[in-house]
Length: 159
Ligand code: ADP
Image 1 (tube, rainbow, N blue to C red):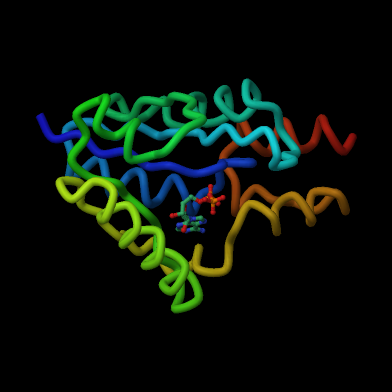
Image 2: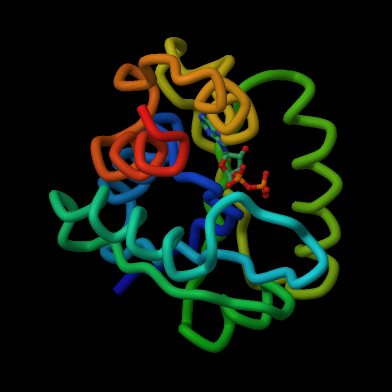
């Protein structure tokens, strides 16, 4: 059984993340989406809200699972017998940052491979912080986020 993990903050999950997860589920038997818990990082959504949004948005993918993790991602991967870490690559700016993390993770855990997947080009400019920013101005985000996220953003910003 080939298991991969897909770590991130998912504050909130976007259609770009989902695109990457869908591609990953075609390559691995199970994809564990891991929501990073970092008490120092201020997030718009609570841990539970982020978990609910990810779960509801991935209900069409039976091989995708969701969990929290607060420590080193490589430790978590080893614990659940994952062989790969999936990351999304949108641009060259992502590449420099991602390469640093991938090489450091490989140093710590040489048996784990980082796999980079490119989302559909329509999601290249999409990230969670742009979504958080635009939601404040009560804009239509249905093209960029799944329905469970759109609903919560509308509740939060009252539109
Ligand atoms: P982080 O806070 O670690 O950047 P994110 O939840 O924003 O966490 O991202 C997790 C992963 O998803 C990263 O590999 C990131 O490059 C990727 N990602 C984020 N947005 C997109 C997108 N629009 N398309 C494809 N991959 C994305």
